[in-house]
Length: 136
Image 1 (cartoon, rainbow, N blue to C red):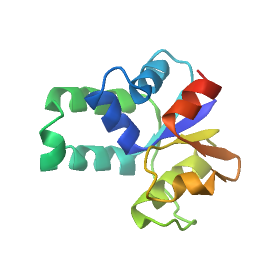
Image 2: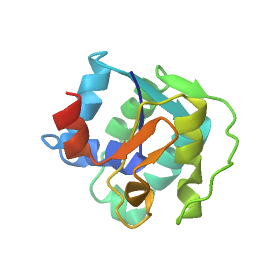
Image 3: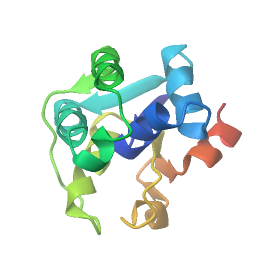
Image 4: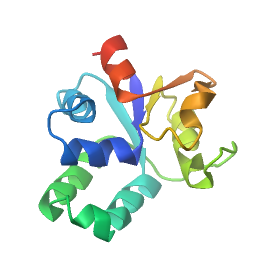
């Protein structure tokens, strides 16, 4: 099974060590599923981790460790953005799901419209609690 995790899920795993996002991240680290990421997402995580509001709650060493761990996932080199979404900054997540042949895209961002979409081709778009209940 292949899974795309929205960057907000990865940040949440670092911020709240006992929530659903952390459970999902730990399940990937325990090889319960394959994680699909991209250079675009790795750059986004690196860049966003420097935002003042995130710097206040993130430890740089933990972000660095996560980025290093993510490089052991399926890392897509180039993304072809073919689908539009309400938040253009999230189009890369849809591209990762399609190109990475993901079964799930897990997001916590209810404003972006990804969850309302429900799926894109074979990929189900769900919140962390649903992913944990259905898969883990």
